[in-house]
Length: 278
Image (cartoon, rainbow, N blue to C red):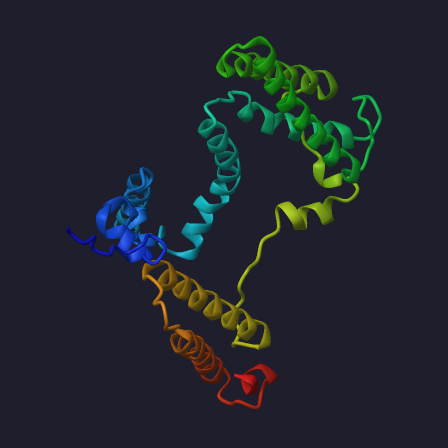
């Protein structure tokens, strides 16, 4: 009578043993997962275009050149995230572009003084929240119409686009007698909201001080943590060994690098408390 050979139970098998039989269960690091994603082609193309213009022109790679396209990319980037999430869900919104101008015109018309143009005379503390309410209301209207009527979102939002476009032209011509609405800088609370939505930071020429040192330390620690996370996701963790020494070594190296930068910037360790801590 043949004896049954003992087999290893599935409970005792580790993740490495389970992945040997099926390649779908093999551990893949973040680099491998990134290369098989469909958007990696667009990322490589964008990087290639940036490198081309950086090599072909002298201004594109400078801070002034970056400020030119980043200033435009801010508003487009905010809208692209929302529209991309909508398209991932299988829908489309043509009224999003007209909504940006409609909210801006609404804010200016609400803060204009009551007079011959018939402004509301409100402050920006009230006008900006009201514009957000209008934007949410238009989005809710589009979504409700798509769900209730089963019409394609392209058709519904196309109608909303023409409504907003006509409303912008009509109300601006009615209240200001022209299609360009201006005068927001005279509204109450303009300085506060400008610091939030339109502030700019100019790096002046000065030696590294305490503020810059803290900034450098935070950047170095952030980069070190990102590298640690990449290593953690790339390599499988050992069953009985923990890379505590590697973590401490990288953090210490990052702190030492920040200390060197601060030391060379001030030519002394006693000039700042942060240097002594490093």
